[in-house]
Length: 374
Image 1 (tube, helix red, strand yellow):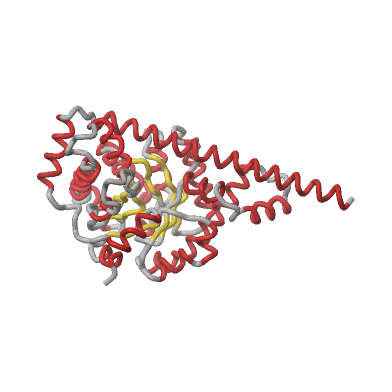
Image 2 (image 1 turned 90 degrees about the vertical axis):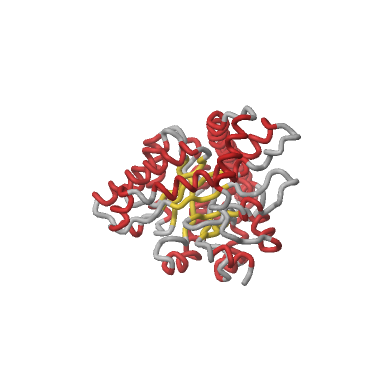
């Protein structure tokens, strides 16, 4: 059995945290799906900024769009490029979606990070993106901000799949679970098929260690231990939450679990084992969205075992020691959410500027060509 295949024996799914036109056109993503390595794909503004802004892969498509309609603005250009990628990826994953009865096979697309603190605009854009992509196996990514929570509920109530992003704390998880359950209850009231409505709650891992390690200092034996311990504690709460009657009643109507998704699972510190955020967080009803280099590393030397429920007493001891060392995890995680929203917004703004430059260059080139032939 291959290393990656063994992960699936513990009821964890791997989603690929990457998408770009060249991977779709080359068949590389299709191959990973066909070989059973990945059963989902996630995207975010940073991924698209690198894909579109950092290559010429999209220049031909941009030129074609502008030739058809020179009045296409930057926002429309972004939408057309991204929606096409998401649609193509969703089509590749449709077989997985059908085979797993709507559990896996999703591709995620994020609402604009500029809307992270605007509930109504998030709802409107979430509905618009879901309609534009027009695939049952697309998930709309919404941040777990205070304003994002009611948007999550509203979208789920409409039967729209939601990937809740930028979760860093236990309180985030509790808030998101409440938003999910309320949304599914409303979805049932709306007469929709609950078995076809899916959601994941994306808990960010490595960024927490990076932030806490700076506070702990160079010589601390606790370095690199906080994020995994905290994630295991959240998983314990996850298991308890979905045993409660409120969910079991919904489950009888076909509702799915809102699975925990481990995000930001590449190691930022080069001294840490490069696959530790996969190896140490494998467990039932979870997803790990894996960046390319981390997936390559696990394919080469990763070891799969049922790990997320291991050493729970030590988990609580570690977190107590982190607190005793002067780390205020509530303050750290709150700041991480703010920084996460800001980072995605910066990537989005950078991408918009790049598209503006490409658009102006192509239109200028077309104008020069027209003048030459006139």
